[in-house]
Length: 288
Image (tube, rainbow, N blue to C red; front, side, top):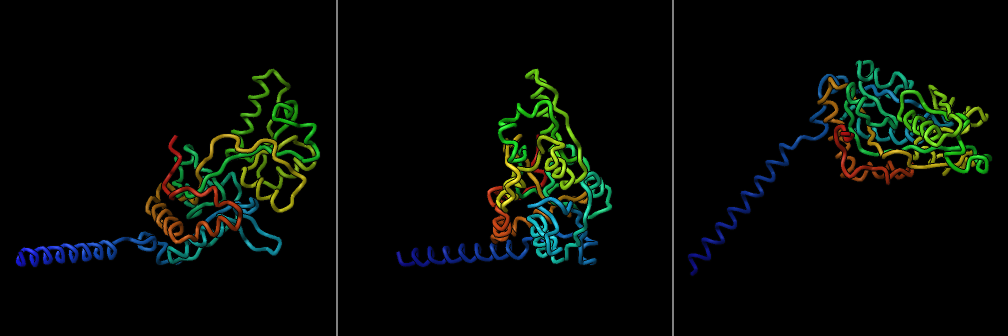
Protein backbone atom coordinates (compact mmCIF):
# COMPACT_ATOMS: atom_id res chain seq x y z
CA UNK A 1 0.00 0.00 0.00
CA UNK A 2 2.87 2.32 0.83
CA UNK A 3 4.42 1.71 -2.62
CA UNK A 4 1.14 2.55 -4.33
CA UNK A 5 0.79 5.72 -2.24
CA UNK A 6 4.29 6.89 -3.19
CA UNK A 7 3.66 6.11 -6.85
CA UNK A 8 0.39 8.04 -6.78
CA UNK A 9 2.09 11.02 -5.14
CA UNK A 10 4.85 10.92 -7.76
CA UNK A 11 2.34 10.84 -10.62
CA UNK A 12 0.37 13.74 -9.17
CA UNK A 13 3.54 15.79 -8.74
CA UNK A 14 4.63 15.00 -12.29
CA UNK A 15 1.25 15.98 -13.77
CA UNK A 16 1.17 19.20 -11.74
CA UNK A 17 4.70 20.12 -12.81
CA UNK A 18 3.84 19.45 -16.46
CA UNK A 19 0.76 21.66 -16.18
CA UNK A 20 2.79 24.49 -14.66
CA UNK A 21 5.43 24.21 -17.37
CA UNK A 22 2.76 24.13 -20.10
CA UNK A 23 1.01 27.17 -18.62
CA UNK A 24 4.29 29.04 -18.43
CA UNK A 25 5.03 28.17 -22.04
CA UNK A 26 1.62 29.40 -23.21
CA UNK A 27 2.06 32.61 -21.23
CA UNK A 28 5.54 33.12 -22.61
CA UNK A 29 4.46 32.71 -26.22
CA UNK A 30 1.11 34.58 -26.00
CA UNK A 31 1.27 37.64 -28.25
CA UNK A 32 0.47 41.02 -26.75
CA UNK A 33 -1.06 43.88 -28.71
CA UNK A 34 2.41 45.39 -28.96
CA UNK A 35 3.72 42.15 -30.49
CA UNK A 36 0.97 42.20 -33.12
CA UNK A 37 1.66 45.75 -34.31
CA UNK A 38 2.99 45.49 -37.89
CA UNK A 39 5.67 47.52 -39.57
CA UNK A 40 6.16 50.33 -40.45
CA UNK A 41 4.34 51.54 -37.33
CA UNK A 42 6.78 49.92 -34.91
CA UNK A 43 9.77 51.62 -36.49
CA UNK A 44 7.97 54.90 -37.07
CA UNK A 45 6.71 55.04 -33.49
CA UNK A 46 3.40 56.71 -34.32
CA UNK A 47 0.16 56.26 -36.18
CA UNK A 48 -2.00 58.92 -37.84
CA UNK A 49 -5.69 58.67 -36.98
CA UNK A 50 -8.31 60.95 -38.54
CA UNK A 51 -11.33 62.10 -36.54
CA UNK A 52 -14.11 64.64 -36.94
CA UNK A 53 -13.26 67.00 -34.09
CA UNK A 54 -16.67 68.60 -33.63
CA UNK A 55 -18.60 65.55 -32.46
CA UNK A 56 -19.01 65.34 -28.66
CA UNK A 57 -18.91 63.08 -26.70
CA UNK A 58 -16.70 61.13 -29.12
CA UNK A 59 -14.18 63.65 -30.44
CA UNK A 60 -14.03 67.42 -30.18
CA UNK A 61 -11.86 70.38 -29.23
CA UNK A 62 -12.86 71.84 -25.87
CA UNK A 63 -12.88 75.50 -24.81
CA UNK A 64 -9.25 75.24 -23.70
CA UNK A 65 -8.25 74.07 -27.18
CA UNK A 66 -7.62 70.50 -26.05
CA UNK A 67 -8.63 67.54 -28.22
CA UNK A 68 -10.88 65.37 -26.08
CA UNK A 69 -13.67 62.79 -26.14
CA UNK A 70 -14.29 59.07 -25.72
CA UNK A 71 -12.61 58.05 -28.98
CA UNK A 72 -9.70 60.43 -28.43
CA UNK A 73 -8.97 58.95 -25.01
CA UNK A 74 -9.55 55.37 -26.17
CA UNK A 75 -7.28 55.68 -29.20
CA UNK A 76 -4.54 57.29 -27.13
CA UNK A 77 -4.83 54.34 -24.75
CA UNK A 78 -4.73 51.91 -27.70
CA UNK A 79 -1.58 53.59 -29.00
CA UNK A 80 0.02 53.32 -25.57
CA UNK A 81 -0.72 49.58 -25.49
CA UNK A 82 0.88 49.31 -28.93
CA UNK A 83 3.95 51.20 -27.75
CA UNK A 84 3.49 54.10 -30.16
CA UNK A 85 2.09 57.64 -30.24
CA UNK A 86 -1.29 58.62 -31.74
CA UNK A 87 -1.13 61.55 -34.15
CA UNK A 88 -4.75 62.76 -34.23
CA UNK A 89 -5.75 64.92 -37.21
CA UNK A 90 -9.02 66.70 -37.97
CA UNK A 91 -11.06 65.52 -40.96
CA UNK A 92 -14.51 65.97 -42.50
CA UNK A 93 -17.19 63.29 -42.43
CA UNK A 94 -17.47 62.92 -46.20
CA UNK A 95 -13.81 62.10 -46.73
CA UNK A 96 -13.17 60.09 -43.58
CA UNK A 97 -13.92 56.53 -44.72
CA UNK A 98 -12.47 56.99 -48.21
CA UNK A 99 -9.40 58.71 -46.75
CA UNK A 100 -8.67 55.76 -44.47
CA UNK A 101 -9.64 53.17 -47.08
CA UNK A 102 -7.42 54.83 -49.66
CA UNK A 103 -4.42 55.06 -47.34
CA UNK A 104 -4.39 58.82 -46.78
CA UNK A 105 -4.74 58.15 -43.04
CA UNK A 106 -3.50 55.10 -41.13
CA UNK A 107 -6.75 54.85 -39.19
CA UNK A 108 -10.01 56.61 -38.40
CA UNK A 109 -12.21 56.99 -35.32
CA UNK A 110 -14.69 59.35 -33.70
CA UNK A 111 -18.05 57.63 -33.21
CA UNK A 112 -18.12 56.12 -36.70
CA UNK A 113 -20.71 53.35 -37.05
CA UNK A 114 -19.65 49.97 -38.41
CA UNK A 115 -21.87 49.59 -41.49
CA UNK A 116 -21.66 46.79 -44.06
CA UNK A 117 -21.11 49.20 -46.95
CA UNK A 118 -18.19 50.75 -45.07
CA UNK A 119 -16.59 47.34 -44.56
CA UNK A 120 -15.88 47.28 -48.30
CA UNK A 121 -13.23 49.96 -47.68
CA UNK A 122 -12.26 49.65 -44.01
CA UNK A 123 -12.01 47.08 -41.23
CA UNK A 124 -13.45 48.02 -37.84
CA UNK A 125 -12.14 47.16 -34.38
CA UNK A 126 -15.47 47.51 -32.56
CA UNK A 127 -15.73 47.96 -28.80
CA UNK A 128 -18.96 49.95 -28.25
CA UNK A 129 -22.41 50.52 -29.75
CA UNK A 130 -24.41 53.57 -30.71
CA UNK A 131 -27.96 54.40 -31.80
CA UNK A 132 -29.66 57.52 -33.15
CA UNK A 133 -32.15 60.02 -31.77
CA UNK A 134 -34.32 62.78 -33.18
CA UNK A 135 -34.05 66.06 -31.30
CA UNK A 136 -36.01 69.31 -31.46
CA UNK A 137 -35.83 72.71 -29.80
CA UNK A 138 -37.25 72.46 -26.29
CA UNK A 139 -39.35 75.55 -27.00
CA UNK A 140 -41.17 73.57 -29.72
CA UNK A 141 -42.22 70.63 -27.56
CA UNK A 142 -45.92 71.51 -27.89
CA UNK A 143 -45.64 72.08 -31.63
CA UNK A 144 -43.85 68.76 -32.19
CA UNK A 145 -45.22 66.29 -29.61
CA UNK A 146 -44.22 63.29 -31.74
CA UNK A 147 -42.45 62.33 -34.95
CA UNK A 148 -45.68 62.64 -37.00
CA UNK A 149 -45.86 66.34 -36.15
CA UNK A 150 -42.60 66.91 -38.06
CA UNK A 151 -44.34 66.19 -41.38
CA UNK A 152 -44.41 69.26 -43.59
CA UNK A 153 -41.12 70.52 -42.16
CA UNK A 154 -37.48 69.50 -42.57
CA UNK A 155 -35.05 67.33 -40.63
CA UNK A 156 -31.27 67.77 -40.54
CA UNK A 157 -28.82 64.90 -41.02
CA UNK A 158 -25.07 64.58 -41.42
CA UNK A 159 -23.78 63.60 -44.87
CA UNK A 160 -22.14 60.19 -45.11
CA UNK A 161 -23.46 58.92 -41.76
CA UNK A 162 -26.22 56.58 -40.61
CA UNK A 163 -28.25 59.63 -39.53
CA UNK A 164 -29.30 59.77 -43.20
CA UNK A 165 -31.16 56.47 -42.80
CA UNK A 166 -33.08 57.87 -39.84
CA UNK A 167 -34.00 60.92 -41.89
CA UNK A 168 -35.23 58.63 -44.67
CA UNK A 169 -37.24 56.64 -42.11
CA UNK A 170 -38.93 59.85 -40.93
CA UNK A 171 -39.69 60.86 -44.54
CA UNK A 172 -41.23 57.46 -45.24
CA UNK A 173 -43.28 57.68 -42.04
CA UNK A 174 -44.94 60.87 -43.30
CA UNK A 175 -45.53 59.43 -46.77
CA UNK A 176 -47.00 56.18 -45.43
CA UNK A 177 -49.47 58.10 -43.28
CA UNK A 178 -50.50 60.44 -46.09
CA UNK A 179 -49.17 63.49 -44.30
CA UNK A 180 -47.37 66.51 -45.81
CA UNK A 181 -43.90 65.64 -47.06
CA UNK A 182 -40.92 65.88 -44.75
CA UNK A 183 -37.72 67.01 -46.44
CA UNK A 184 -34.13 66.17 -45.50
CA UNK A 185 -31.45 68.82 -45.05
CA UNK A 186 -27.91 67.48 -45.52
CA UNK A 187 -24.96 69.00 -43.63
CA UNK A 188 -21.20 68.52 -43.69
CA UNK A 189 -20.62 69.20 -40.00
CA UNK A 190 -22.41 68.89 -36.67
CA UNK A 191 -22.18 72.65 -35.93
CA UNK A 192 -23.92 73.41 -39.25
CA UNK A 193 -26.74 70.99 -38.45
CA UNK A 194 -27.02 72.36 -34.91
CA UNK A 195 -27.25 75.92 -36.21
CA UNK A 196 -30.05 74.98 -38.62
CA UNK A 197 -32.03 73.53 -35.72
CA UNK A 198 -31.33 76.48 -33.45
CA UNK A 199 -32.33 79.02 -36.11
CA UNK A 200 -35.57 77.18 -36.86
CA UNK A 201 -34.55 76.35 -40.42
CA UNK A 202 -35.09 72.68 -39.56
CA UNK A 203 -37.81 71.32 -37.32
CA UNK A 204 -35.60 68.51 -36.07
CA UNK A 205 -32.12 67.02 -36.25
CA UNK A 206 -30.82 63.46 -36.14
CA UNK A 207 -27.89 62.87 -33.77
CA UNK A 208 -26.56 59.87 -31.90
CA UNK A 209 -28.55 59.04 -28.77
CA UNK A 210 -25.29 59.17 -26.83
CA UNK A 211 -24.46 62.63 -28.18
CA UNK A 212 -27.89 63.97 -27.24
CA UNK A 213 -27.73 62.51 -23.73
CA UNK A 214 -24.21 63.84 -23.17
CA UNK A 215 -25.01 67.38 -24.28
CA UNK A 216 -28.22 67.49 -22.24
CA UNK A 217 -26.28 66.28 -19.20
CA UNK A 218 -24.00 69.30 -19.59
CA UNK A 219 -26.89 71.71 -19.10
CA UNK A 220 -27.79 72.34 -22.75
CA UNK A 221 -31.49 72.94 -22.14
CA UNK A 222 -32.31 74.38 -25.58
CA UNK A 223 -32.73 70.87 -26.97
CA UNK A 224 -34.93 67.96 -26.08
CA UNK A 225 -35.06 64.38 -27.34
CA UNK A 226 -38.22 63.76 -29.36
CA UNK A 227 -37.46 60.09 -29.98
CA UNK A 228 -34.46 58.11 -28.74
CA UNK A 229 -33.06 54.79 -29.89
CA UNK A 230 -34.24 55.16 -33.48
CA UNK A 231 -33.07 52.09 -35.39
CA UNK A 232 -30.82 49.31 -34.13
CA UNK A 233 -27.76 49.75 -31.96
CA UNK A 234 -24.76 49.70 -34.26
CA UNK A 235 -21.20 48.67 -33.31
CA UNK A 236 -18.47 51.29 -33.56
CA UNK A 237 -14.75 51.63 -33.01
CA UNK A 238 -11.49 52.64 -34.70
CA UNK A 239 -10.87 51.32 -38.19
CA UNK A 240 -8.19 50.96 -40.83
CA UNK A 241 -8.00 50.06 -44.51
CA UNK A 242 -9.15 46.58 -45.58
CA UNK A 243 -5.60 46.25 -46.94
CA UNK A 244 -4.24 46.37 -43.37
CA UNK A 245 -5.88 43.40 -41.57
CA UNK A 246 -2.92 42.94 -39.22
CA UNK A 247 -3.28 46.50 -37.96
CA UNK A 248 -6.98 45.92 -37.24
CA UNK A 249 -6.05 42.78 -35.28
CA UNK A 250 -3.56 44.80 -33.24
CA UNK A 251 -6.30 47.34 -32.47
CA UNK A 252 -8.63 44.59 -31.22
CA UNK A 253 -5.84 43.08 -29.11
CA UNK A 254 -5.13 46.48 -27.54
CA UNK A 255 -8.83 47.12 -26.89
CA UNK A 256 -9.14 43.65 -25.33
CA UNK A 257 -6.26 44.44 -22.97
CA UNK A 258 -7.89 47.78 -22.09
CA UNK A 259 -11.17 45.99 -21.42
CA UNK A 260 -9.45 43.43 -19.19
CA UNK A 261 -7.55 45.94 -17.06
CA UNK A 262 -10.56 48.25 -16.60
CA UNK A 263 -9.15 51.20 -18.56
CA UNK A 264 -11.88 51.05 -21.21
CA UNK A 265 -14.66 51.28 -18.62
CA UNK A 266 -12.89 54.08 -16.76
CA UNK A 267 -12.65 56.15 -19.95
CA UNK A 268 -16.25 55.42 -20.95
CA UNK A 269 -17.55 56.36 -17.49
CA UNK A 270 -15.86 59.75 -17.82
CA UNK A 271 -18.30 60.54 -20.64
CA UNK A 272 -21.30 58.63 -19.25
CA UNK A 273 -20.96 55.97 -21.97
CA UNK A 274 -20.06 52.85 -19.98
CA UNK A 275 -23.40 51.23 -20.88
CA UNK A 276 -22.47 51.39 -24.57
CA UNK A 277 -19.42 49.12 -24.20
CA UNK A 278 -19.57 45.71 -25.89
CA UNK A 279 -18.85 42.53 -23.92
CA UNK A 280 -15.69 42.06 -25.94
CA UNK A 281 -13.99 43.96 -28.77
CA UNK A 282 -14.08 42.29 -32.17
CA UNK A 283 -13.41 42.73 -35.87
CA UNK A 284 -16.38 43.95 -37.97
CA UNK A 285 -19.11 43.17 -35.43
CA UNK A 286 -21.82 44.25 -37.90
CA UNK A 287 -22.65 41.20 -40.00
CA UNK A 288 -26.11 41.90 -41.42
